[in-house]
Image (cartoon, rainbow, N blue to C red; front, side, top):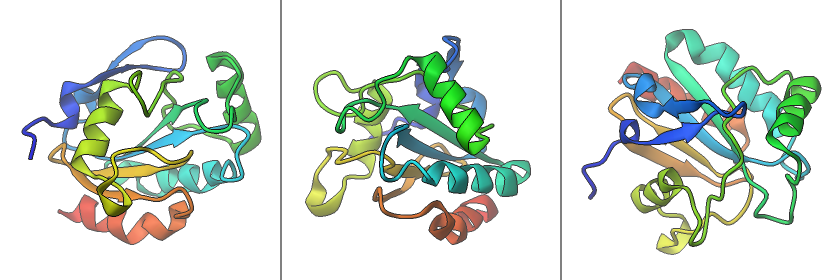
Length: 163
């Protein structure tokens, strides 16, 4: 088991600013690789609802757009930000587009998939809207499949917030 925690990673916000994930230490994080033209794209609404419901208790939802699966997020960061806000009212933090799998995978996703492998121990991200729940201690609690609807995560989020 790695001794790393999520606070050791940085990312770029969707508007290009450096974000140290250590700023979220002590909070529960739900990290999701997103896409604007995917069958699961309507999950943005559920993710926003989780954010609105639990942010005052310490939940942070972080969206990481990726164009790796079916080319379903080809737009620029600016276009993605506009799409998410206009169509789903997304107000949770969105990061700049990244790769989440393969040799070019962002270091955060290499760590997440090592800490919480998928089915049969695979480290690969198989599709858009794979979700990772990270506890207040900065360690991964659980990985969720793309088809796991955000509202189904509420009990796990509540447990993490209470821990």
